[in-house]
Image (tube, rainbow, N blue to C red):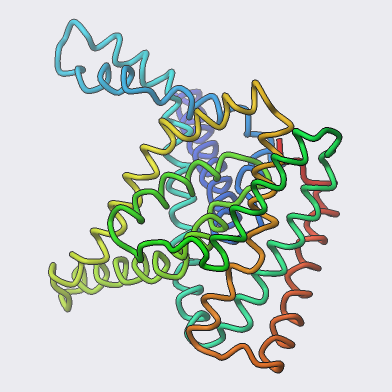
Length: 320
């Protein structure tokens, strides 16, 4: 009896520990320039995370869904163990908790102090590019082309040379797929991808509105109609993320296996070219006067110092 109780307590502690990992990883991924993959690497569960995500295949999902057949239940149990859901579920809940908390803060600050938050984000992004490029070597023409391609592509999107089609379902779906895929790469932030695609504040607003509407409904003061619009955006984003884990994330991992340096240089180039992207959010509230640009620079320095401080505490960030 005592051994059973102790095993139960130990399992609960392990679940809470994984949930805490999710909180840390979600907080990092919700901030552009700070990577959840880096947190996973530093806390020592990156290998388990990649193995679990790689194990999420359509075949195993079908095996689990066929558990209603008594003859297939053993295979369903094996598939559940192979997917390591006892790890992914509490980790995912922790990440969602952190993202939900930060989304509300971002939505508020974006309206009340846009210069502060987006200047800070620009500093985070710029400093993370410096830190990541420092760990790589541009030693061949192929490396230089890969880095330049990433920088150019991100700059063109950041400066609206490539026009993105608003915030429709297709854009939200693609944003979810790319952001979740970036989540598993040390050094690349999912939030950075959302800022580059112009969806960061929008999705923060939608998630906050969705959670607020659910809370109002639970207290008896809301309605299902208030949940519909933001709920649709959140569901489309999550579905895009799931598809991204099964497709884009695997493609990136394979690219890293066969052409590690050029792939990393392209990805880090995307980070460097994204530095101007937060300016679009600022221009929605302020003209880019000398005073505004000066304040952005000041808060950018604060963001950069924060990132460099994290880098020093962590002993250096490695994009892979």
